[in-house]
Amino acid sequence: MLENRFQALIKKELETIFPGCMVIPMNGNYIQGFPDLLMLYKTKWAVLECKKSENEPYQPNQEYYLDLMDEMSFAAMICPENRKEVLHELQQTLAPRRAARISKRKQASLG
Image (cartoon, rainbow, N blue to C red; front, side, top):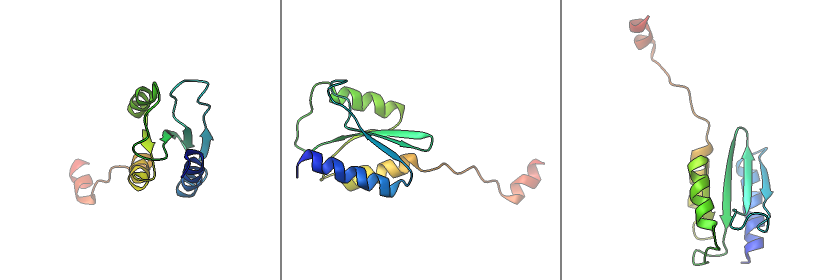
């Protein structure tokens, strides 16, 4: 599968998994090595570098930007071989955090 077809497939899949998200293809000529897709979802964001296979080499600066942006929010290389795992990890990362729940018994002892 060509990388641009895989990227289009991932874009559609993200829009299905994260209703209302915005998936923006990035211009690789603007910043050398910047990931292919930027996804904005509610108050969170993620970037994905699409590769046609897991053996596809990285271009200059790609690993640098993936590492840097993964520290900020979420960034990963995605390819057909790891698609399910990356999308699952993305769902776990962007899932809403539940408020801590205190049992009624614990509340009574605190108050």
